[in-house]
Each structure stands twice: as structure tokens, then as C-alpha cells.
Image 1 (cartoon, rainbow, N blue to C red):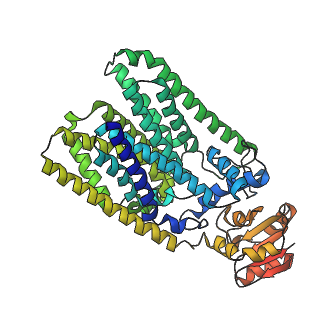
Image 2: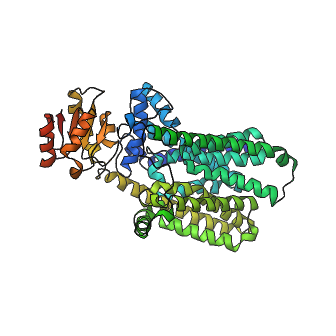
Image 3: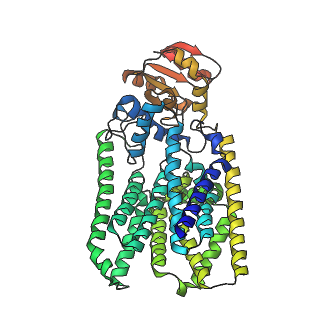
Amino acid sequence: MRFVKMNTYKIGFILLLLCLFFFFNFQEYFFLHPQGVHFIRQTDSLSFVSNYYHYGFDFFHPSLFNLMSVDGRGACEFPLVYYFVSLLYCVFGEKDFLLKFVHLIIFFIGIFHLFNLIFLLVKDYFYAFVIPLFLFSSVSLVYYSFNFLPDIAALGLSFSGWYYYFKYREKEELSILKISFLFFTLSSLLKVTYLINPLAIIGLFLVELFIFKRTDEKFLLHKKKIIVTFFLSLVGVLLWNIYVKYYNSLYNSSYFTTSPIPFWSADKKTSSLVMEGIFSEWYKKYLAQSSFHFLALVFIFIILSFRKLNKQITVLFLFLMFGSICYFLLFFVQFRFHDYYFLLFSPVLIFLLILGVQNVQSLKLKIVYQIILKVFLLLIVIAGMNYSRIKVGERYQNGNDVHSKVGFILKKNGLLISKLKIPADSKVIIVPDLSINGGLYFLKLKGWNINSKKDLTEEKIRDLKEKGADFMFVVDKDSTLLNIGKKFGTPILKNDDLTIYKF
């Protein structure tokens, strides 16, 4: 009977995830091309997939469309998802939505595992349903959950890792621990900063071994296996990152940030701009204000009742919090422009809420007070989710921004461009294009972007022609740009917002 009841709730949560898909209007965004906030990083990810598909499925030689490096070679996150989606292209055709759909599936699987994890720890289906939904009060999380960036997949995999870790603690079967670390390894391969999660587990292991003096037979029996499993996971992640450094150096690629840009490296002006970006631009995107206030109340509550805290969960929370602070300080400068960096804080927020719930449960409140607290939390979650829904909608309404403009123009003129039958091995220049791979991705051609009018000089054009440029796309009506184009090439297509010159 208990098994049937549990499965009923699991099916219910899966149906809830399906409802979330429509609640956040993902069906309206399903077939949209990359646009809006972080258009640049969206098209970088899609360029990796497209290059596998068009230029050979060589897993360990990822490349992009921009020829700023040798042959466009460049590496960043472990390309397993990109490679898998490129194989899907062989079946379904080259469709933008496949990458973000795969990311969403990975993330929703992680959220489903989070549901199971919370029930495992608090034994209350209400909290198991509602705490995962709390995360959806983050505009950033909702926006990237159905998007092209790999961060959301890394987060989903980390949630799966946490579920299987606590399942291992319950069952004490090494095979479950290995599954847990497999998820953590994949998560950290996609984003190395997600190593914070398995590092927190090793921190707890050491505390239990040397401070709590845990001596139960299974723990001592598994001691070496735990260390070896973590070591193999760590080595796998480190080897990939060493390879990335080597590969990028070999092909003269310096585009991706593969090293920290810490707080102490920033001057006073930069630090001020970062903090301004966080508090004026991104703060309300990280979480709804009511959700921030609720977390503050929970944090105060667990401090005041720290004696009743679950020791193991508390240690994990403290290690995750310490790791999150280090992460913020090490990648401080990146927080100025990248709201998706906030996603890594999600596990520490979840453990904060779990501690709060466990402490409330330890108070053994009367039913009426329990109901009041649950209704209060539910209202916070519903308000936060609705806030995210509205703000994500606004992001898409404003999708045709200064960075995405080139994509919209090339997409609109796609049929005319295809009639020109530009050879697939042609190299092109796109001006103005503020994205490294944005315009090139829409053309599916290798080449170069030139940011603005001031960067386009006759000397620059001659240099790129010598490197093999065959065409120049001017996605602007500026007469200066058009005159330079005329000087070096013949117009083969001209309309209000796009002129193409053949050299």
C-alpha cells in the first residue's frame, strides 16, 4: 500500500512538471531561435552542436564558427550533450529547439530526483512538492531551464547526484554511491564549479571520520571506496580541464573564460560596477523579493535553533555555503553580466530550506500551526512562480535587443540568402555583429564578426580577404559600411537591413 501511495505521488509530481511547462508558456518559446538575454552564449552553445554536425563528429575536437582561433577550434564545457544533440540532428534535422529541449529534460529529471530527496529527508509530501517549486521563483532559473546554455543541465545533474547520495546513506550500497558520483562527475564536467557538491560530501565524510568519530561497520568498510570514487571523479574533471587548456593553447583560442577572475583582481571601479550590476540589474532576477525575505527568515530561524539541527545536513550546508562564498569571490567579475552564475547557489538554498523544515518538524507544532506555515510557504512559492512567469515573458518580448538584432535580420532574410547558393566552405565577414558566433551561426558559415562601424577599416577588410574571406554581410544601412563594402566587392543582395558583397 505504501509503495502504491509513493508511486501515486511520484506520478503526480511528474504531471506537475508537465503543468509547469505550460504555466511558464514554454510552448510559446519552443521553436524560437536564440535571442535576448545572453544571446552570445546561446549561439556559442549551438555553434558547438552545429559544427559537429557540419564538420565531422570528432568528439575531442570541438569548434565554433568564428575563425578568431585556428580553424575556429575552441573548447570549454565537456561536449557530451552537444555531441548527443548533433546526433539527434541526423534524425530530426538541424533544429534549434533540440538542444534546449534536452537541457530541459535533464533539468526536470534533476527536479524529480530533488522531489524524491526531500521526501527522503523530511517524510512529508507537501514539502517534497513545494520546496522544488520554490526554485522556480528565480527568473534566471526559469529562463535558462528551457534554453541553450549548459548551466541548467549541470544543476539538474547535481540534484540527481544529491538524491542518490542520500539514497546511498539510507541503503548503504556502494553501487548507489557510484551512481551518485557519476551524476556529480557529469555535472562538474559541464561546469567545473559544480565540483562544490562532491567536495561538500567529502567534507562531511572527513568530519564524520575525524570529528564525529563515526565507527559503524558499513561506514568503515566503505571508507576506502568512498575516497577512491571521489578521487576518480575528481581526476576525470581535472583531466578534461587540463585538456581544455591544452586544446585552446594549441589552437590559439582565448575566447572562453577558463580561469577565475577573482574579487581581489578587480580595481575599485570594476568592483563598484559588479555590485551595481548585481543589485540594480540581476538581484530581482535571482529570486523574487518575497522569496529572498522568506529565506532570510528561515536562516534566522535555524541560527536561533541551531542546537536542534541535523548534524549531517548542517555540515553539508556549511560546506556548500563556504564553497558558494569562495565561488562568488573567485568569479566575482563575471557576476556583473552573467545572471546564470547564480544557479550554482541553488543546492545551498535547498539545504537551507530542508534544515528549516526539519527544525519546524522537531517543534511538533499543533496541526493548525503546521497548516498556517504550509499555506504561507505555498503562497510565497505561487507568488514567486507567477513573478518569474511574467519576467521571463518580458525577456522574450524584448528578445530583439542590440546583440540579437543580427540574428533576427538574418533569419528574416533566410530565404533570400539561400537562393544565392553560397558554398558551404565559404568564409564570411559580418558587420556589425556584437556576438562572436551569433550571425555566423544563423548562416552556418565560418568567418569573422566585426563589432561596430569604428572597427571596420579598409586594412581590416584586406587582412580578412587574405585569410580567405569570400563575402561580407552588412546588417545595417550605414553609408560608411556600405561604401567600404562597394570598394572591395560586388553587391549580390541588397534590401533595407542587409547588403551582401561578394569579393
